Amino acid sequence: LFTVFYVPATQMASDNKLGNLANMIIVGKLLKEIGDYTEDGLNAALDKVISARHADMKEANLKAIQLGAEL
Image 1: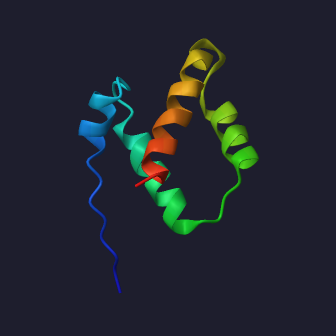
Image 2: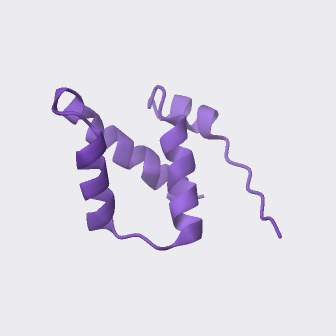
C-alpha cells in the first residue's frame, strides 16, 4: 500500500526565497506524515549535519521543514 503526496517543493522554495532547499521542504512533509520526531531532535540533527561554516543556514532549513510540514 502506497500513499502519494504532491509536494511542489521547488516552487515553494522559490516563492519563499529558500534557494536550493526544496529537499528540506520534502523532509518536512515526510516528518509530518511519519509523525515520530520532536523539535529538539530536529534541532539536534540539524546541528550535526550543518557545518559551523554554514551555521547561518539552520534557520532557513528549519523554515523549509516547517513549510513542508504545513502541507
